[in-house]
Image: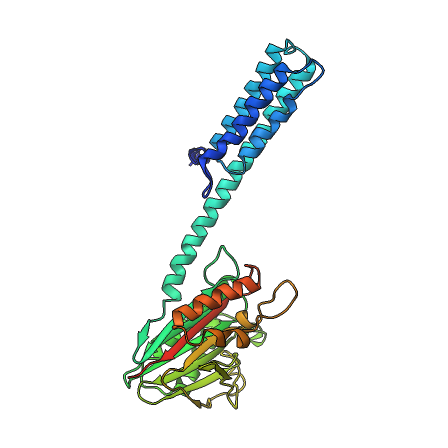
Length: 373
């Protein structure tokens, strides 16, 4: 373990940078050395050598940076010898300054590389967790073409509070869930895993859609409060907005229950219709305390060729630099004729362009197109 810090010297170049860039600090060292030796005695260019290790930090690792620092110091010593001023206090101070700056640059490289390795490990763990918890949606489920998109707010994390899942039932229908768990960090990931697990365990059974909603609410509340005291349970604010859907294979309809979640969008040609239910129920986790024992199912037409767009508020509440929300209802009809995968590809590019590559919240989108049976 004690030797681990020295492993950083084995990484000569930063990812994405060409070794050819080493010509810049080398050229600088040679140029300063030659010009300084040939210049009049009152002109001293030696202090410019400090730029060599400073430039190298940008594209190289600690080993190459240390080499450039050593070459810069050697060049300064050579200048002092050739000009006969090596014993003077001025040239010795310049050499000492070069040594100090080079040491600082190497230290910065080591710390930066360690940080990048840590982020890489964290990202690898997050990707593994995402592959287990947020499993890819099936490309085909009965007569449905399905595609999912998840965009994390933080580049270092691939999983947050937004979620989606799908399941086939024995009576030839597809059930889907899209949700948004309150909060972020490990608590949100834990609650997302809980909700996804409860859905996958029960969605394929013969239970009705309202009974599935009751099951999710009860499972969510039980797990998030089982270790809390009564006082903590009274102040517990763990919840998740969600939409549950059941899409029969042969009936051109979609049944849905909304639990405080943004309404799905139905695209029929260039016409967009929000599927706003008459009654939007409380979010998952609030049903029991408020006496929710039944959920109303709303049914909407979903015909061959129609496309259904499910999303979280991370999409519609994404702001640009001027504070304007992303206009999903205006942009989505432009891609209504595309396959679900292509639609989500266009949507991702357009959304990230709107926010200049920086989302303030996780975002999830699911696109579903009904095909002929």
